[in-house]
Length: 576
Image (tube, rainbow, N blue to C red; front, side, top):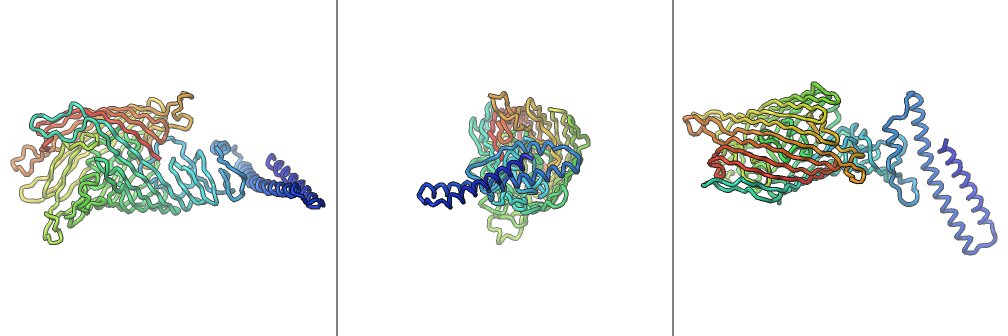
């Protein structure tokens, strides 16, 4: 009724202005003042007509909502109330062709999720239906049939029906810190164990291009190595999301395997993954791995499987030191092929409890075959080998202390193991175990076996605690709601959590074998880590970790007799 009264008032005022204008035009005087008055009244009439058009849109929308509510017999929902109180951006005179936070009736809108958890470190792939139904927007702007907003905290431009969209994100991880009491023993190499240095661990800019249920994700990474100065590709893939709770993917991608690897790096407990999950994922998955496969999720279960090939750049000799895990080779005559499979269940899902159980398996069933020299064009044979090595879970350019060296005559590599996680209110505890096997061929050669495990815990002191993500089959970071964002004047402090983990990898195999070719002494590495994570809001995080590591002797020049040490590391993180 108020809208009708306002429309009527504007119409009556417009009629009076029209009459006044007609009288002014009929006056015999034609001096400059009357001409100015005529122009002013015409401009006022134009502006009022624009306001009347806007009010008519609002009135039509209000009547449609009231009619729907009357038929359903329900009260206005909380979501509608939140839309009624959203912030409106306005500037200058009203133009009916430009609408601010006031779409035409029935238009689809883009909204910012209110969970308060950090954004993803990769292209956010969702169905067209989910994209259109993104809720609780802080603000969006409608200009000439386009929507500009921040669904799930990521800058997005979309058509009014959300069929076309472009999203641009950011994953910024700057690490700094150093090692102490980690020096070598007599006769050992020192290694790159800096007392203080820094590393741009990740600097990804995810670009997501959408046409309805078809989505292309391209994410360059300007922090693609252990040391600053390299640029790489994190992902470049095409996806179809038209099947319920299903994503089909082809291209360079990070296949989801292990619970830890299924989390976004923006959600990690500590700066780095536990060593065993990092080692397992790189057998036939990891960043920018060619993949063809799918994932499907429900409230209680999750499954994903992918056929995989080489990593991006791994047939390029110039890339031998610039990609994150070992780089490429210009002598590759036959690329690697493999596969991953992960299944997870959620037998308990309540407000205070979540129980996660799962299993992951991965295999490189045909390793890359490389010629002996760079003149591979004239080579008549090649050989297949593999190797494993891990840093002490702080990545600022330091050397591997636990490492197997090259394992020759390797035919296949595989790994498998269980996952378990339990959340009770603000406390989350989880862990995984994996066995890694290397099948070798050749006279007298035995298969090699390695293993590793970890246990982690996180307690959210204040803020929204870590919760379970059905879409990733893993746990998220703590959340910061809009009314909890850091603001000392209001006694708001964001979210704070204390974390810790215990991590072990054993890279020794066949130590007592009489055949020296079967003996692999890679060492056993144990890492204890504790830390604090502070989230002033959903987009920023500060991390502080302390680690103590113990590594038994290996064949590395930096670890002939066994080595221990400590590290202190910090990260400043931004995600959009």
